[in-house]
Length: 139
Image 1 (cartoon, one colour):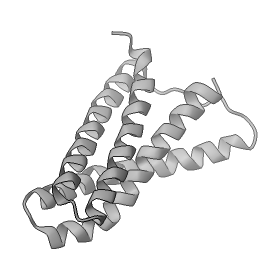
Image 2: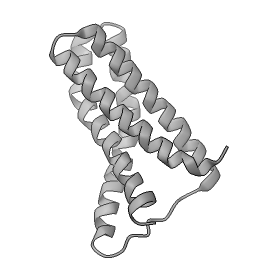
Image 3: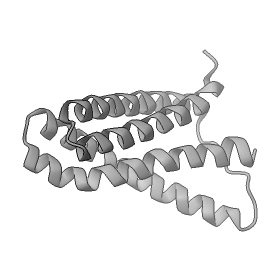
């Protein structure tokens, strides 16, 4: 397997996760609980696939330096640092939120989902932004 295709795969998985999260959020807002459940399980599964692929890639390639210069460097590192910190937080948040929903603890699920959803969206979207900045815009 050519590991150098994995950053594009990872960005795609992050983008798909964001889309599934958005659709799932719209479903629960409209009262479609079963459709919401399916979308959120799909978003979680997609994020798990991303994490496996991401870890595999970086275990084989290591760190990839950012080559942008000038004003874009602090912008990139601000995005990257916030992305990394929130990505670490979203793992337990997503697991807890999913488990509470699946175990029909809807009051607890809703309380934590208010935090999980925007953080997960941010992490998914900034994952795509980081990919674009490192692998497409400033190679």
